[in-house]
Amino acid sequence: MNTVKILTSQAVPGMVVSEDIYTKDLHLIISKGTVLTDKIITRLNFYSITDFYIYSDENLVKVETDYFENTFYTELKKSESFNRFYQAYHNSANRIKDSMDSIMDNHNEFDADKLLSEVRNILYHCSTNIELFHMLHCMREYDDTTYIHSLNVALICNIIGKWLHFSSEDLEAITLAGLLHDLGKLFIPNEIITKPSKLNDFEFSMIKTHTIRGYQILKNKKIDERVKNATLMHHERCDGSGYPNGLLSHEIDPFAKLVAIADVYDAMTSARVYRGPLCPFEVINLFETEGYLKYDTKYILTFLEGVVQTYINNTVRLNNKMEGQIVFINKFDLSRPVILSNGQFIDLSKQRDLYIEALI
Ligand SMILES: [Fe+2]
Image (spheres, rainbow, N blue to C red):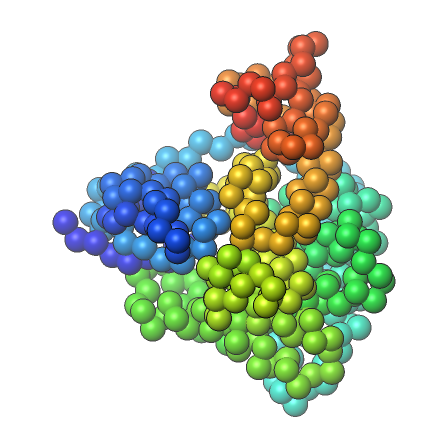
């Protein structure tokens, strides 16, 4: 049977993997013959597996999606406040696109303040971080472009920076780092970024160069060095498994470590062509069980604790189809809070067979 190499971003539930896939330190992630599901694709992204081989027989690709209607977000999307947020978000995103395009021309002045004012404009429409997180989740089905992703990462960086009690100066710098981290992707031909079929080795290595290309554009601009480093190092991982230089924790700029968390969280909770947004608790569980070696411990703990707090009082559906409200957070098991369902407390840290399947 034929096999083809695909990018993990092109993976679709139902595809069948034609090789054993290992982490860099040789732990088996999935074995040959595994049928891909959303959960497995999330794991591959999480371990920074950028490409792998699948069987190319068309008959093996059976896409089965089983997504639940998300009533909480459906209601929020009908609200006036979301409408205002949506308008502000899209207006700002368009202006950010124009600014980024002009940064690509080296002769243009770099106006960091103008870019940051666009983020401030969006933040103005949300009185709390909780509201911002919910609004962002309502945007998950919209355009999956470098500009939208960059804006989301900037907003998430801003929230984490606040949780970490950054000074206002550092907060501006980390927000700018989020906005500019993928700037180098604008150099990569769109046909490669959006190519639906097999990429050759040259195209794969082209995509990986976005870190260095982004840095080259920024290196002579009058902006905070940490912003430039975040562009260069946001795909580095603390255990040395990242790129472009396989740096270790102490060699990676703290801003790059923070952008890395916002980047992965946004990518995993955003809709892709082949799937809807993943439940944040699934993403939190992955970070919690497998992320401490790859990401900065203090940053990841602050981030996960903060994200989980935003979902207190939310209604969720468990894998046994029971519904209930999140009432307590387990500090040592963040993806497994206590749920109140039909007057009964369910402690997910004790009932290990149950997990949160969806926010509703
Ligand atoms: Fe990137």
